[in-house]
Image (cartoon, rainbow, N blue to C red):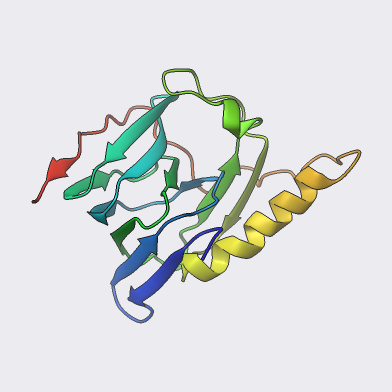
Length: 176
């Protein structure tokens, strides 16, 4: 169910996590993690908004396609109603942190433009993304809705994970 629409199928106690992800979702955040993610789109299309080399980029993973997202690439999966996909990733090591970040005016962000400065960010050790994202998204939403908004909590210094500015994405591949 929104905002994340993600359910961990396997992996709570193993080295490989398998998640089923459906649409619609209501995510405006960008997620970053250590370790690759493998997306398999079973029904409908996935729009994966990413930051590649400091630029906003849209990757469309169509029904019947798969896509390998490299480690350290901020990404925001956008799924329309009735879409279904699988996501595979390795379990996180005990000292690894994931991050969620929001850019200002996310609705106005367009592919091909430089990624703006991050407006709000939080970091966490990921065990079950479907469970852990919702409270972070709710804290961001409450912060954003505050009338005379206080400054966001400062990020840790140094940040526990940074985007890889040198990574280049390969296009999705068809498996159908």
